[in-house]
Image 1: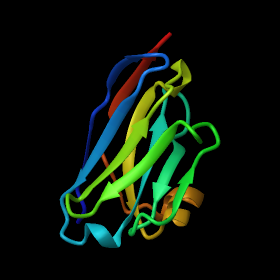
Image 2: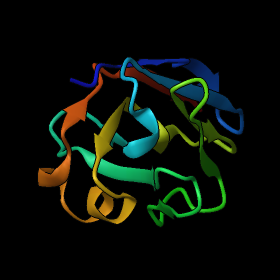
Image 3: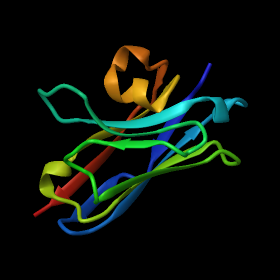
Image 4: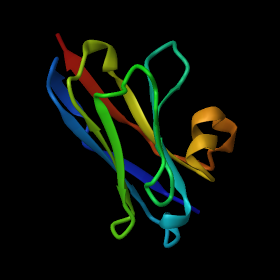
Length: 125
């Protein structure tokens, strides 16, 4: 079973940056594609970014393209989300997720096998 633990959330001013981390407690981390989602109260959880097991394929939501970068370090069993030029509308709880492929994570949450507990990101104006 994959256990995912996010960290790195916090309060930042608009235009600032944050880096989220998601540590996985599984020996076969490199066999999983990983993704990031976010959710605000009263709204559905939305896709943010996904990365293939090798890191060669990445997908982003249109709303974060050019501002967010997803990466992974398989030696450390960790996936990252570097967020720059943050906007107040980026405020949300951010979740990492594990799945069979980056495209599957992007297209259908039903493919996700494990979610993290979430980390709060708040962007002040």
